[in-house]
Image 1 (tube, rainbow, N blue to C red):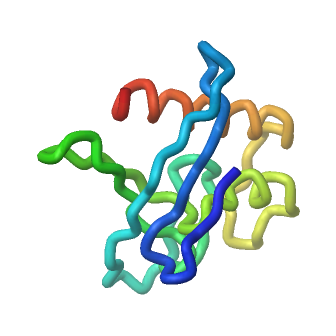
Image 2: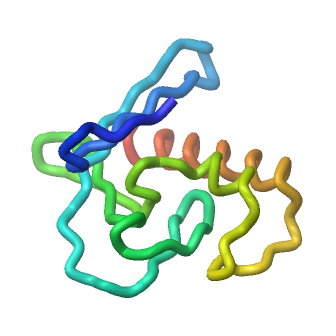
Length: 115
């Protein structure tokens, strides 16, 4: 489950913890983007305008933030299930394999960088 707050500054992501099956949530903050070139989401590999892909960061501690270039509304699953954009790179993975890869990337990011 993901949603962007009306200001567009933060996006929230809630998912199931793989170990305990409990909900786990993170708040991603969008950084100001001065680039006007298309960018690729690190999770779903969609290539979108800079207004739709942004550096999203998470506060790990008071002194440490980590981030990735992500779809600013975390629409990664929809991007995978919809037909690819004409700008997206061609991949040999089918949609099911892409969803599995997306899930692995999200959980790896959380386990390596946040927990």
